[in-house]
Length: 629
Image (tube, rainbow, N blue to C red; front, side):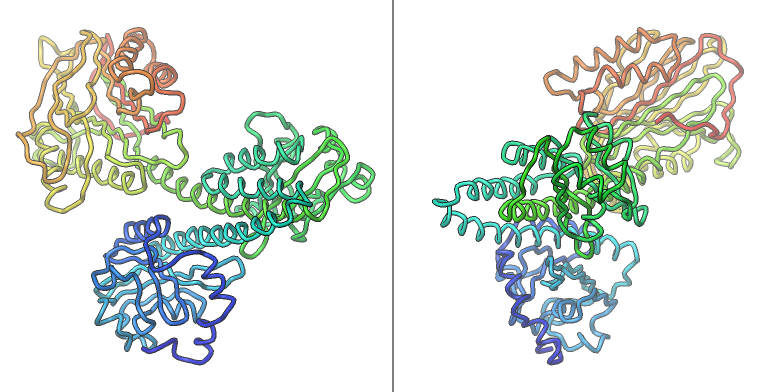
């Protein structure tokens, strides 16, 4: 294809406003770290060999972000429009999803098919703040591809985040132009220069924020020194409940009214609601105006905050405002035209940071829900007490591959039949490498594959199950790596019928801790890594007499800044001894409260089991109780 295919499409691609916005991004046919990151994410989450951040100019497309292209395209990072499917995304202003580009009338003649190997194609629009389509975040397969709804949703989410980044760059470039103009007039208007400095700081500071609480704190820090408000708040449109607004509550608790009025209607009598609904800045100059134009609860809130005047600035969104930024003073404060412009620009930076934070929060929340859903209930076992606890990392942008598991097994005599043995229990704790959605997904696969390996080898030990999993992990190219403990627990025969035999294999994991007798089970082999050759997995055995307590844990518990792992393990062992006779749930609470760092950078999984001092008859039942979370 030589071009978009119609005069109308050509005019869209060549539109001067669109091309001007494209230039304002500052991106060229050169690698850009941020755009490369989006291309890598697209390739990984959708699972394609080629992914591009493609920006369409009047006569070519450029690739500031690129994964999987071969030379000469990889070297030049550009193609003419004769090789562009992304131009159709720009021309049509909507996603272009093709199972086979060779079968679509718009694309079948494109030179991208023979020269770049494009067959399956899914391109999502990348837009600026005015709705101009600048290009496409596209996933490309070299074979026909039937795209799933989930893949398209993930690609669309990434394109939205990439668009937010492009808009931020455009605003930043515009800010640079505005800053240059401010320097010209700074000799006469020193105050305006100071305000421009605030915008410069805002662009830099807000670009690095990831969470909503961090966005609010950053905005407050930025404006307090210059504009000197006594209150800075953020109110957001609640996407989960249409027509409602939600305040970001100050975690210090210094503004109780935020909790008292956390959510309210967009049509309610609050100046913040009017600013968002009407998409205009609302200024409150005194209490008389507030009483005349707004609801009694708004007046009461002003009194509780000690405010005399305030300004409410809408946060610009793609279609409607995202919410409102509110600044309040305890004295009369005049908002001149320069300050209004400043606040409007600051609201723009804040809105982009809010969009990015919401995107991250949504993705992480989904990943955490998926991760926690994989942590199944513990079985009820007569003769053995079990308790578990899982705590995610403190950093909100992390999910991981930590897990625990416990399940009954068929006996060897049953030949793998569905009925359960009365006395065999498998337990495991592990940590898959990584802190992302892929690690959480691999964790679920590893748990399921270990269970399958145990069931497929009735009567065999935990080392056999681990070896079977590792074989599948390598041969099926699953790519899981990490550390784990896998163990089987069986009752001892007479005369030790009150004791249990623990057989375990350790793949590079921190040592389990045991009381009665007190010791650390240091024996271990190499970690799990696909294709890594090493000695055969070995098993270790120990008898757990009545009163014994065994603790399995992941390294997030004992990795602490300012202290060694050995010190953390020593502390855990002391707590284990001190709570040797108390409820297991209280033991785990004590460990999680005292051992980890205040803000752990890794997930923590704990699994404790105890042989009661006077055990009842032993049977294994199906899971009925919920795991401690």
